[in-house]
Amino acid sequence: MSLFDFSEMPVNATEQHHHSIGYVQSVDNGKVFIQIDSGEKLQLLRIGSLMAIPAGTGRFIITIVSRIWRHRPKETEQKSESEDSFEDIYTPIPENNGSLLTLLGSVRDRPEGPQFSRSMDDLPGIDEEVFLLADNNLNNFMNVVSSTSKAAQDTPLHLGQFSLDLRAPAFLDGNKLFQRHSAILGSTGSGKSWMVARVLEQASKLPDSNIVLFDLHGEYRNLPYARQYRIAGPSDLASPGPDVLFLPYWLLSFEEMQALFVERSEFTALNQIMAIYNSVTNCKRKQLETDGKREILAQFTIDSPVPFRLNDVIDQLKELNEQMVPGATQGKTKQGDYFGKFSRLLVRLGGKTTDRRYGFMYQAPNNWFEYEALHVLAQQLLGHGLDSYKPTTGIKVIDLSEVPTDVLPVVIGTLARLIYILQFWTPSDKRHPILIACDEAHLYLPKVHETNPLELAAVESIERIAKEGRKYGVGLMVISQRPSDVSDTILSQCNNIISLRLTNPIDQQTVRKLLPESLGDLLQMLPLMDVGEAVVIGDAVLLPTRIKIEPPAAKPTSSTIDFWDRWAKAEAKDLGFYAAISENLRRQERLDCPLPTGPTSQPD
Image (cartoon, rainbow, N blue to C red; front, top):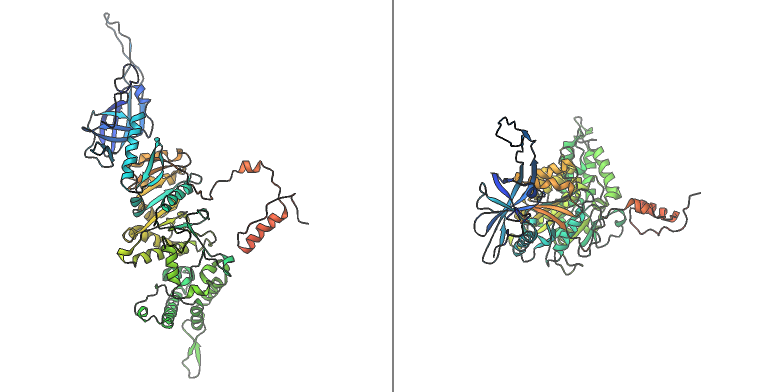
């Protein structure tokens, strides 16, 4: 039995085939132009409609409508001077109606049933008849796409339903989505956070999933299936809880240390870099000697994550900054080569080590300076399916909302780099794949980064993962509302694009450049899509098309506040409420505030 039946009831009395639309007029690379003879047939088409072109017994080429046109020429006056002719003096010229179709793939009848594939043995021929997929034919085809996608994996990733046919579930290939990198893009309020939560929720149902999400605004802190961590804030320095992460400076690479410690515009910047290099190397060597790690001593480098005390480095720099050496005259001394050249560096280091905003880096508890601290951090970042953690899922959300914006790129770059190098040094047969999801990527992975060393360090770390991570089981998911601001190198490595509504023309053009030319027309609909609707294109999806996202069961705390409705409700506030939130600001701690009750008070 054939998948499609194109012999249903006619459109009108003159039509013999219900869905026969027209004939192939010309074929280009990935494009098909068809001629449509009647206005009635033209009215059946919509942008995004699917069309089928027969290509042999039991095989059809599937296309999507990208453009429709109707050229209605003016009537041309025909003069008739013949006495024997009584024809009308006006003869109408036929309309020039047509449509541009984009090739998507082909569907074939197999012994086990029809199957859809993105590959095509040949292109349509001239004058081939073209049929519109609608009603039962459309439903049959979408069911084939769903069943083909589902059959490719035992547990496919279910995002929602196809917008063309909401009865057909939309599945993605989780292997290709994560191993070949992906980007979730969409303007504010388009449903981007729901899409991320939907992906995490589906992954959490797998017994051994492994994802790290960098959460910049605390949107995902209420997901019940995820292990929640947060970078330590000022209120956590005295008594950190088990969910608090520190990122001590000894975990930084030397490039990251330079970006944090050295002001490159200073005249003595090169001397500062050299002095820090020597001091840090000496401190790491002494610590390894103290810990008795002789086997590490012979092979460690400046970038080896070995604990050391920054105060020891500062003491060595102070000594150089104040050093007096023997002079030319016996008994006389003179200033050393580095005398006074590190004064500004020392002031800068002193300020950083005492600033509680950066306490997660410079004021970590003593246990974070033990040799085994890296072992614990590796377990927290890479751990999956551990019974000692509740929940046991490998979905990990790291809340970075309290990290100062000036060091945010370094923090994220360091975390991503640690995940990558830990995977790199894991034996290949023991590697468990892990996904790094970068929320609000435009804030720390910018396109123009030459002038900011802090951003440069983060971009270089993520770019390396984008280019090489697949080999070591590290996937990347870029999440952004401004793709035009994200590094081109990183986005170009994302072979799967999930784009929700984008209203900015520059962002639309950026996404269009990421796709093959033949599929660029599919993105023309980006500014017109509904909230929670996405165009999915790439290796992970069998049919590039629009998908209606199924809302996640556990929703992120990113709902847009209804300004007008809230303003329309009378809510009394007392001074206690405002005093509580003011104290939260002073304490740098989010404590529950008393409910606003009673009449509004004013200070005396």
